[in-house]
Length: 100
Image 1: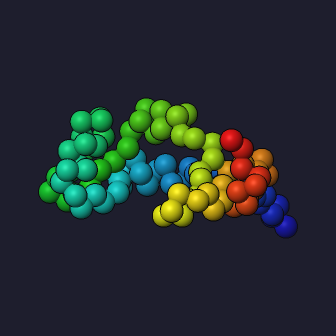
Image 2: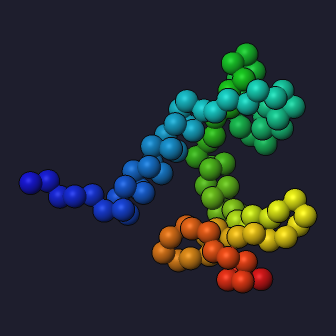
């Protein structure tokens, strides 16, 4: 019987395939101004199809500079929840548990 995959191996596979799609297929950017910004930042851009791809270097830099948590705010500015503050799961926590 085959060994059942763990959540870690599934997470790794999803990440690996996502990176593959972003590098080989790319993503659609319907706004010409955003395409120009991506091009100036070093992304391979295909204006005719309005597609952009990410390079391994750009992806590595993005992953290293992203914040470790995301804060969800109401339009009024009130903090509603934080994501990424839990070391086990990336799930929302109430504002009282958000780090400052």
